[in-house]
Image 1 (spheres, chains in turn blue, purple, red):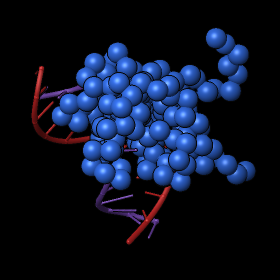
Image 2 (cartoon, helix red, strand yellow; image 1 turned 120 degrees about the vertical axis):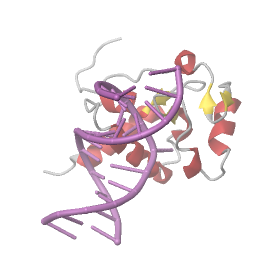
Image 3 (cartoon, rainbow, N blue to C red; image 1 turned 30 degrees about the vertical axis):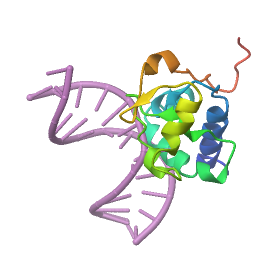
Image 4 (tube, rainbow, N blue to C red; image 1 turned 135 degrees about the vertical axis):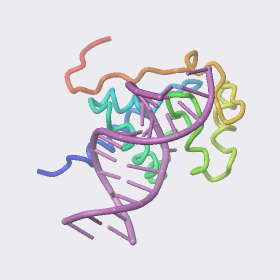
Length: 116
DNA sequence: GGAGTGACGCGGC
DNA sequence: AGCCGCGCCACTC
């Protein structure tokens, strides 16, 4: 019945909203947290529609290399970088410095979490 | 309905 | 260690 893929999109947005300020994660990490490590591209595609939600900090989502691959999709060419730097994340050459230090691992939304 | 594309990731060379 | 190519999944033409 309904909600199949759309539910996946909502999960992506919900997960991105949980990204704390000053932190960032990758598309693959989100996809993996949702149980679909191979759907990393779909996550990126979902982020493309994130403009419908102003609660989704898409600027905190970068690729596995910490590169701001989606910066071109923002209002300004340097909007994404500016937002990250405003949160204390150093960005140079469209790439996050010490990305692993700012890397945020998303919680597994398998359904039964009850963990802490 | 087949073919191409994309805000990715990984393996091979 | 960097460059090239393939795979995956959803969407559009």
